[in-house]
View 1 (tube, rainbow, N blue to C red):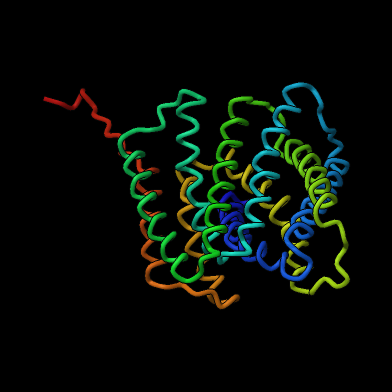
View 2 (view 1 turned 135 degrees about the vertical axis):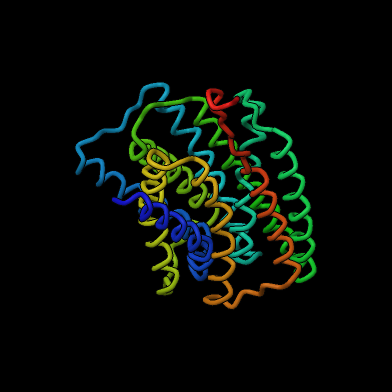
Length: 296
């Protein structure tokens, strides 16, 4: 597969996922939507493992990796699906775009990385200013938006923490194996939550909701992760870091066109500040090499 095709595929899937999340909960409820998505994803991954003649590993490091990744899948998705009831799909994508900033903060403390250089700190400050603008723009339209914003920010924090924990464990297993183990554990946890809170099956699943659940289970859970893992191995990390700058803009447009979501100037201004902060955070000064043999 072309690396550029994989890159475009990631952008497309990540840009459409927020609206699919919102649609999947319309009718059957958000818990049924996310639980079904995880079960479908786990089943597809198991079929892929069987086809590739691979097996799950259950040694200590593998289990630690599955559990750490489940924090980012189960914990993060639980908050995202609940919060998506109160805010637009475009807003979900914008807030989740803060993950590179939070990841750098966790990496600085947990991995002792020098990830808080002046430009990165400046990016965090600018993005926080944008977050304040976004917060007040949504609160002005609906007081319940507060719940959605806080929930998605919590989800972003769990996703970022999970990413750093996985890197710290440093388990050298193929991505499809890690994905399968993680989805199995996350599916069991979602089934437990669903059985304890909202265990009835919906009488009718609207076509839009059912299609969204299938899309998320197959494309977002399986294809999206596989493409991301492939691109990460074959593409410069700086280019991968641009994805959170691109997807929120496309997600806002998709939500406006296909779901009639309101996109006001205040929201656009806050989004612009967040994306500017991400750009500053990812900025790297180009290295200038000097050939001393040509200096006279």
